[in-house]
Amino acid sequence: MTIQHRLPVDGQELVALEYNPDRGGVPVIYIHGIASSVLFWENGTQLTPILNERHWFSLSLPGHWPAHFGANFAESDLTAERITAWLAAAIRQLVGDQPVMLVGHSTGGFAVLALAAQNPGLATAVISLSGFVQGRWGGILRPLQLLARGGSIGRALFKFNMTLSSLTPAIYHQVSGLYASDRRAYFAYPGLREATTRLQAAARQLDLKGLAAYFSRMPDVDIQSWLPRISVPVLALTGDADRIVPPQQARQIAAGVPGATRVELPGAGHMPFVERPEAYGAVMQDWLRRYSG
Image (spheres, rainbow, N blue to C red):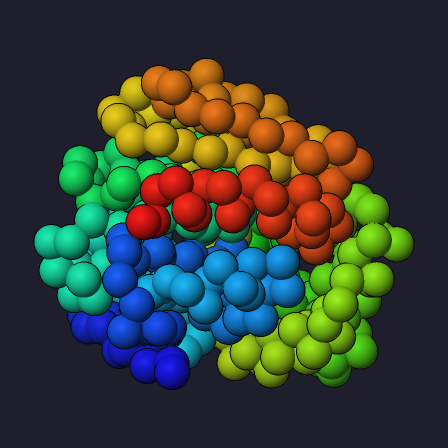
Protein backbone atom coordinates (compact mmCIF):
# COMPACT_ATOMS: atom_id res chain seq x y z
CA MET A 1 0.00 0.00 0.00
CA THR A 2 1.37 3.41 -1.03
CA ILE A 3 -0.07 6.73 0.16
CA GLN A 4 0.83 10.08 -1.39
CA HIS A 5 1.10 13.06 0.97
CA ARG A 6 1.08 16.66 -0.23
CA LEU A 7 2.79 18.80 2.39
CA PRO A 8 2.36 22.60 2.37
CA VAL A 9 5.53 24.23 3.70
CA ASP A 10 6.28 27.96 3.63
CA GLY A 11 4.25 28.75 0.53
CA GLN A 12 5.33 25.71 -1.48
CA GLU A 13 4.35 22.04 -1.58
CA LEU A 14 6.53 19.04 -0.87
CA VAL A 15 5.42 15.48 -1.60
CA ALA A 16 6.05 12.19 0.17
CA LEU A 17 5.12 8.62 -0.69
CA GLU A 18 4.35 6.44 2.34
CA TYR A 19 4.90 2.68 2.26
CA ASN A 20 3.72 -0.03 4.67
CA PRO A 21 1.91 2.28 7.11
CA ASP A 22 0.76 -0.75 9.10
CA ARG A 23 4.33 -1.75 10.03
CA GLY A 24 5.88 -0.86 13.37
CA GLY A 25 9.35 0.31 14.29
CA VAL A 26 11.09 3.58 13.59
CA PRO A 27 9.91 5.12 10.30
CA VAL A 28 12.62 5.51 7.66
CA ILE A 29 12.72 8.70 5.58
CA TYR A 30 14.49 8.45 2.20
CA ILE A 31 15.50 11.60 0.30
CA HIS A 32 16.60 11.40 -3.34
CA GLY A 33 19.33 13.34 -5.13
CA ILE A 34 19.34 16.36 -7.42
CA ALA A 35 17.11 16.16 -10.52
CA SER A 36 15.61 12.87 -9.33
CA SER A 37 12.23 11.94 -7.88
CA VAL A 38 10.34 10.40 -4.99
CA LEU A 39 10.09 7.36 -7.30
CA PHE A 40 13.85 6.82 -7.02
CA TRP A 41 13.69 4.32 -4.16
CA GLU A 42 10.99 2.00 -5.50
CA ASN A 43 11.83 -1.63 -6.23
CA GLY A 44 15.39 -1.62 -4.95
CA THR A 45 16.29 -5.24 -5.68
CA GLN A 46 18.77 -5.67 -2.80
CA LEU A 47 16.59 -3.95 -0.17
CA THR A 48 13.05 -4.84 -1.23
CA PRO A 49 12.63 -7.67 1.33
CA ILE A 50 13.77 -5.56 4.29
CA LEU A 51 11.85 -2.47 3.15
CA ASN A 52 8.68 -4.54 2.89
CA GLU A 53 9.06 -5.20 6.63
CA ARG A 54 9.24 -1.49 7.48
CA HIS A 55 7.24 1.70 7.58
CA TRP A 56 9.04 4.14 5.29
CA PHE A 57 8.62 7.32 3.29
CA SER A 58 10.18 8.72 0.14
CA LEU A 59 10.33 12.51 0.57
CA SER A 60 10.92 14.95 -2.28
CA LEU A 61 13.61 17.56 -2.31
CA PRO A 62 11.90 20.96 -2.48
CA GLY A 63 10.92 21.94 -6.02
CA HIS A 64 11.29 18.44 -7.46
CA TRP A 65 8.21 17.13 -9.27
CA PRO A 66 5.58 16.30 -8.11
CA ALA A 67 6.62 18.83 -5.43
CA HIS A 68 6.76 22.46 -6.55
CA PHE A 69 8.06 25.80 -5.38
CA GLY A 70 5.59 28.55 -4.53
CA ALA A 71 4.91 31.67 -6.55
CA ASN A 72 7.18 33.73 -4.29
CA PHE A 73 10.19 31.39 -4.56
CA ALA A 74 13.51 33.16 -5.06
CA GLU A 75 16.85 31.58 -5.90
CA SER A 76 18.31 33.14 -2.77
CA ASP A 77 15.99 30.88 -0.73
CA LEU A 78 18.16 27.87 -1.60
CA THR A 79 20.46 27.96 1.41
CA ALA A 80 21.38 24.98 3.55
CA GLU A 81 19.36 26.50 6.40
CA ARG A 82 16.17 26.99 4.38
CA ILE A 83 16.31 23.62 2.62
CA THR A 84 16.79 21.94 6.00
CA ALA A 85 13.93 23.86 7.60
CA TRP A 86 11.54 22.97 4.77
CA LEU A 87 12.39 19.27 4.95
CA ALA A 88 12.13 19.22 8.75
CA ALA A 89 8.68 20.82 8.61
CA ALA A 90 7.55 18.22 6.06
CA ILE A 91 8.83 15.34 8.20
CA ARG A 92 6.99 16.69 11.25
CA GLN A 93 3.78 16.74 9.21
CA LEU A 94 4.34 13.09 8.33
CA VAL A 95 5.28 11.64 11.73
CA GLY A 96 4.73 14.34 14.37
CA ASP A 97 7.34 14.17 17.12
CA GLN A 98 8.25 10.54 16.42
CA PRO A 99 11.97 10.07 15.71
CA VAL A 100 12.92 8.73 12.29
CA MET A 101 15.87 7.12 10.57
CA LEU A 102 17.20 9.31 7.74
CA VAL A 103 18.63 7.98 4.47
CA GLY A 104 19.66 10.18 1.55
CA HIS A 105 21.56 9.93 -1.72
CA SER A 106 23.85 12.68 -3.03
CA THR A 107 22.01 15.98 -2.38
CA GLY A 108 19.68 13.87 -0.24
CA GLY A 109 22.81 12.67 1.58
CA PHE A 110 23.72 16.29 2.30
CA ALA A 111 20.13 16.95 3.42
CA VAL A 112 19.96 14.13 5.97
CA LEU A 113 23.21 15.28 7.58
CA ALA A 114 21.92 18.85 7.75
CA LEU A 115 18.60 17.67 9.20
CA ALA A 116 20.30 15.73 11.98
CA ALA A 117 22.63 18.64 12.77
CA GLN A 118 19.90 21.28 12.89
CA ASN A 119 17.17 19.23 14.56
CA PRO A 120 18.32 17.35 17.69
CA GLY A 121 15.94 14.50 18.48
CA LEU A 122 14.67 14.15 14.92
CA ALA A 123 16.84 11.19 13.90
CA THR A 124 17.81 7.88 15.47
CA ALA A 125 20.51 7.35 12.82
CA VAL A 126 21.64 8.78 9.49
CA ILE A 127 22.86 7.11 6.30
CA SER A 128 24.46 9.47 3.78
CA LEU A 129 24.93 7.68 0.44
CA SER A 130 27.43 9.48 -1.78
CA GLY A 131 26.53 12.56 0.25
CA PHE A 132 28.48 15.76 0.71
CA VAL A 133 29.15 18.66 3.04
CA GLN A 134 30.35 20.98 0.28
CA GLY A 135 28.21 21.31 -2.83
CA ARG A 136 30.81 21.87 -5.54
CA TRP A 137 30.17 18.78 -7.67
CA GLY A 138 32.48 17.03 -10.12
CA GLY A 139 32.13 14.75 -13.11
CA ILE A 140 29.32 15.47 -15.53
CA LEU A 141 27.58 17.76 -13.03
CA ARG A 142 30.40 20.29 -12.76
CA PRO A 143 29.86 21.77 -16.27
CA LEU A 144 26.13 22.06 -15.49
CA GLN A 145 26.90 24.02 -12.32
CA LEU A 146 29.10 26.36 -14.33
CA LEU A 147 26.37 26.85 -16.95
CA ALA A 148 23.78 27.57 -14.26
CA ARG A 149 26.06 30.30 -12.91
CA GLY A 150 26.82 31.66 -16.39
CA GLY A 151 24.12 34.27 -16.90
CA SER A 152 21.20 34.07 -19.33
CA ILE A 153 23.13 32.23 -22.03
CA GLY A 154 24.51 29.73 -19.52
CA ARG A 155 21.04 29.16 -18.10
CA ALA A 156 19.62 28.55 -21.57
CA LEU A 157 22.35 26.00 -22.29
CA PHE A 158 21.75 24.37 -18.91
CA LYS A 159 18.05 23.94 -19.67
CA PHE A 160 18.82 22.62 -23.15
CA ASN A 161 21.18 19.99 -21.72
CA MET A 162 18.70 18.92 -19.05
CA THR A 163 15.90 18.67 -21.61
CA LEU A 164 18.04 16.69 -24.04
CA SER A 165 19.22 14.23 -21.37
CA SER A 166 15.64 13.23 -20.55
CA LEU A 167 14.21 13.48 -24.07
CA THR A 168 13.50 9.74 -24.43
CA PRO A 169 13.79 6.71 -22.12
CA ALA A 170 16.69 5.40 -24.22
CA ILE A 171 18.67 8.64 -23.93
CA TYR A 172 17.97 8.94 -20.21
CA HIS A 173 19.04 5.33 -19.67
CA GLN A 174 22.41 5.94 -21.33
CA VAL A 175 23.00 9.32 -19.65
CA SER A 176 22.28 7.82 -16.23
CA GLY A 177 25.27 5.53 -16.75
CA LEU A 178 27.58 8.56 -16.72
CA TYR A 179 27.10 8.72 -12.95
CA ALA A 180 28.69 5.29 -12.58
CA SER A 181 32.36 4.32 -12.58
CA ASP A 182 31.78 0.62 -13.25
CA ARG A 183 29.46 1.02 -16.23
CA ARG A 184 29.46 -2.70 -17.00
CA ALA A 185 28.09 -3.51 -13.54
CA TYR A 186 25.71 -0.56 -13.73
CA PHE A 187 24.03 -1.62 -16.96
CA ALA A 188 23.88 -5.26 -15.81
CA TYR A 189 21.78 -4.36 -12.75
CA PRO A 190 18.42 -6.21 -12.71
CA GLY A 191 15.48 -3.92 -13.34
CA LEU A 192 17.62 -0.93 -14.36
CA ARG A 193 15.76 -0.30 -17.61
CA GLU A 194 12.42 -0.29 -15.77
CA ALA A 195 13.79 2.10 -13.16
CA THR A 196 15.29 4.56 -15.65
CA THR A 197 12.11 4.55 -17.72
CA ARG A 198 10.13 5.47 -14.62
CA LEU A 199 12.59 8.20 -13.65
CA GLN A 200 12.76 9.61 -17.19
CA ALA A 201 9.02 10.24 -17.11
CA ALA A 202 9.48 12.15 -13.84
CA ALA A 203 12.50 14.05 -15.19
CA ARG A 204 10.38 15.38 -18.05
CA GLN A 205 8.22 17.12 -15.44
CA LEU A 206 11.06 18.90 -13.63
CA ASP A 207 10.92 22.65 -13.08
CA LEU A 208 14.05 23.64 -15.04
CA LYS A 209 14.11 27.16 -13.61
CA GLY A 210 14.09 25.77 -10.08
CA LEU A 211 16.65 23.13 -11.02
CA ALA A 212 18.98 25.77 -12.46
CA ALA A 213 18.69 27.61 -9.15
CA TYR A 214 19.89 24.48 -7.31
CA PHE A 215 22.86 24.03 -9.64
CA SER A 216 23.76 27.68 -9.26
CA ARG A 217 23.47 27.83 -5.47
CA MET A 218 24.82 24.47 -4.31
CA PRO A 219 28.52 25.30 -4.91
CA ASP A 220 28.18 27.86 -2.11
CA VAL A 221 26.86 25.29 0.38
CA ASP A 222 29.22 24.14 3.13
CA ILE A 223 27.94 22.42 6.29
CA GLN A 224 31.29 21.14 7.56
CA SER A 225 30.96 23.22 10.73
CA TRP A 226 27.55 21.65 11.46
CA LEU A 227 28.83 18.08 11.66
CA PRO A 228 30.01 18.06 15.33
CA ARG A 229 26.42 18.82 16.37
CA ILE A 230 25.25 15.40 15.15
CA SER A 231 24.93 13.06 18.12
CA VAL A 232 23.41 9.96 16.49
CA PRO A 233 25.10 7.14 14.53
CA VAL A 234 26.08 8.21 11.02
CA LEU A 235 27.11 6.02 8.10
CA ALA A 236 28.88 7.70 5.19
CA LEU A 237 28.75 5.14 2.38
CA THR A 238 30.40 5.95 -0.93
CA GLY A 239 32.13 4.49 -3.94
CA ASP A 240 35.88 5.03 -3.91
CA ALA A 241 35.78 5.94 -7.62
CA ASP A 242 32.96 8.50 -7.38
CA ARG A 243 33.73 11.48 -9.63
CA ILE A 244 30.48 13.36 -8.91
CA VAL A 245 31.00 13.53 -5.15
CA PRO A 246 34.58 12.39 -4.53
CA PRO A 247 35.15 10.02 -1.57
CA GLN A 248 37.03 12.81 0.21
CA GLN A 249 33.58 14.12 1.14
CA ALA A 250 32.77 10.88 3.00
CA ARG A 251 36.12 11.19 4.77
CA GLN A 252 35.22 14.72 5.85
CA ILE A 253 31.88 13.47 7.15
CA ALA A 254 33.55 10.67 9.11
CA ALA A 255 36.12 13.08 10.54
CA GLY A 256 33.54 15.71 11.46
CA VAL A 257 30.76 13.61 13.03
CA PRO A 258 31.72 12.06 16.37
CA GLY A 259 31.80 8.26 16.05
CA ALA A 260 30.73 8.19 12.39
CA THR A 261 31.32 5.10 10.24
CA ARG A 262 32.76 5.35 6.72
CA VAL A 263 32.42 2.61 4.11
CA GLU A 264 33.98 2.95 0.65
CA LEU A 265 32.98 0.37 -1.94
CA PRO A 266 35.92 -0.44 -4.24
CA GLY A 267 35.51 0.49 -7.89
CA ALA A 268 32.07 2.05 -7.45
CA GLY A 269 31.08 5.51 -8.58
CA HIS A 270 28.13 7.71 -7.65
CA MET A 271 25.61 4.86 -7.85
CA PRO A 272 27.07 2.30 -5.41
CA PHE A 273 23.72 0.57 -4.86
CA VAL A 274 23.66 -0.31 -8.58
CA GLU A 275 27.38 -0.84 -9.17
CA ARG A 276 28.01 -2.92 -6.02
CA PRO A 277 24.51 -4.09 -5.02
CA GLU A 278 25.49 -7.04 -2.84
CA ALA A 279 28.03 -5.13 -0.73
CA TYR A 280 25.71 -2.13 -0.53
CA GLY A 281 22.75 -4.33 0.43
CA ALA A 282 24.68 -6.04 3.24
CA VAL A 283 25.74 -2.74 4.81
CA MET A 284 22.30 -1.17 4.47
CA GLN A 285 20.44 -4.15 5.84
CA ASP A 286 22.70 -4.16 8.89
CA TRP A 287 22.06 -0.48 9.59
CA LEU A 288 18.32 -0.68 8.92
CA ARG A 289 17.95 -3.61 11.30
CA ARG A 290 20.03 -1.93 14.00
CA TYR A 291 18.47 1.53 13.94
CA SER A 292 14.94 1.25 12.57
CA GLY A 293 13.68 -1.42 14.92
